[in-house]
Image 1 (cartoon, rainbow, N blue to C red):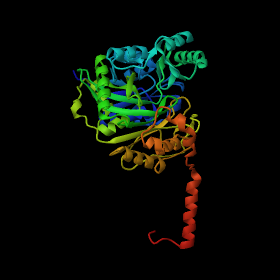
Image 2 (tube, rainbow, N blue to C red):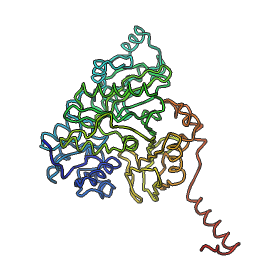
Image 3 (cartoon, helix red, strand yellow):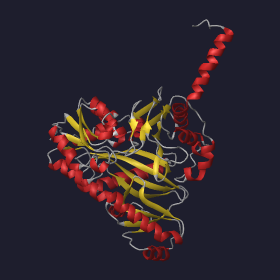
Image 4 (tube, one colour):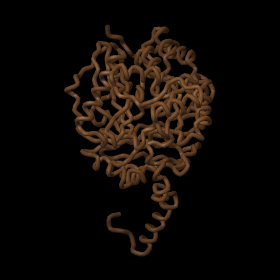
Length: 485
């Protein structure tokens, strides 16, 4: 039976909230925003049809308050809740409470969220589905267990210690030698409790020169599961992605088919519904892929898949939540372009330290083949309590070279932000680096080339434009007024 959705509460802020509201506007669906005290003038608040204050600045007092958000939806006659990404997006308790309140949950079933949120459990499901997994050991509590596993399985350093519930780059550490094991284990367990409320830890062999590849999957309530091909998310810092592209330059057609088929098979086995992503680590030397995890939510980088397929993934999530079957078959999905995305964060490009304050000037890239997913406007404040993402910049082209050329223009010629520091100089250095252009990189690319990338920065400030004006005035004074004026 089809469920009618005429009003959706978006349980998020910034870029994800604005992105979801755009599709809701297309569908003539009204939206309800929730906001904390410092977000009272935020972009997503101004964009929504209704806005509800839910608490003070810390996420624990506002955006993570499940009961307040559900009450806000009910009091404003919402039909459904979309969680976006981050905050409560992969919280099975939140999903269950939304459904128990008689609201539609725009996402996968709570049981699937719970199972896939546990890296140990999801790894078991991958093994059951005959998908290769990284060699490792689960439920680790002591350094001695790690040493015993490495010795018995012949595993050498480096290794990766992860919280079972880790995500967003938190709760995971690379360990280079024996001396670091005990301290790293203690740190990961501490972070696991702090960020995820669960100190369960697993340890895996670290794949040198690994590449991060994920497959976008959509599924409906009628067991139709379709992949929308893959994205390459290898360029990262501190285990967080900053540049993504689709398709992946790492795969040939045979590997692409194998990887995407494995993702569909796994999602079908776990009873997945809605949009989700299966992540893999690809060993480019051995040409071997390993299962990493399932993200049971809308991914930050979903936009580049939309660009190469022509589909609206948020729209598909809404349709599936309404009870509609997928309107296409696998054979009908034919990507015909290449797309890049960069995450423009408010951070110092040299140190990655957060840069908070007021955006005194904001000029977003425009022109052919550019798509912007914004989270802020000129004059808005970037508060110190949340993710520092200002906007997503996407570029598309007939091939990878073309897409890189468009992205170069978007960042170097059309982007202007003042008042806060951003990663723009670093992003430009990366896409201009010969190794990136050649498609030769791993998850350690920034770590290995940081000094070189920083040396490529082109300093640009407001004095540049003052000098341009002064030069123009001087030319007018010396040569007279041009005939075209």
